[in-house]
Figure 1 (cartoon, rainbow, N blue to C red):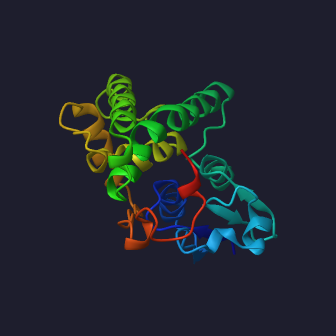
Figure 2: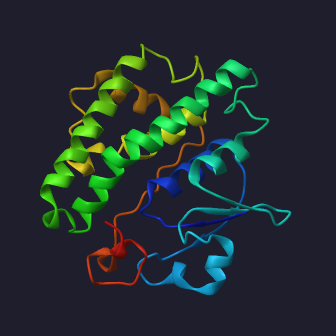
Amino acid sequence: MSTLYDYPASANCLKARLLFGLLGRDYDRVAVDIFDGDTLTDDYAALNPLRETPVLVTDDGEVVTQSNAILWLLAEGTPYLPSGALDRARVVQWLLFEQERVMPGIGNPRFRLLTGRAAADPAGVAARQETGREALAILDDALPAGAYLVGATPTIADLAVYGYAHAAEEAQIPLAPYASVRSWIGRLEALPGFVNDLAPYPPNAAPGAGRSIYDARP
């Protein structure tokens, strides 16, 4: 059985939990408290030298890091990863879009606002929120009624982008202007097996309250 090392408040980790739920696959879940020094140990560095979550250990002991790589591996051979070359390329397109626009533009300000870090750099947060609004506008245009990002059925492109896009309100980016995005979120959340157990950040995520790699990052 696969083992997922994850942090409950991270939407990067939620992506993997979501796909496990949609596939109806059992897995072992190891909660990692990234603000209590759990990723700073030598044992964790052996799993992921970047000391990030999530980390997937497959049932045969192989280690995969990076949330979208984990999605790709789990989805191989399932309807959540198309078999055609063009559609697979389009999935990659959205996975890159998620990392380049959605995570920096929504995930980053969400993290800063919810953990009390935004006050240290309000201009930086505002610039990131603008990136998030631009990303949502692009998504809104790309989602005709009843469709998904790659074709008529959901793929890991949708799950990857959903992770932080659905939490835009927590980044103080209203979803109200993006009707197609809101409808798409509703379609995903109605899928059998859907799970969204994204947790709030705990008190030790506040600046100076814990020990993590993130307090040393800009």
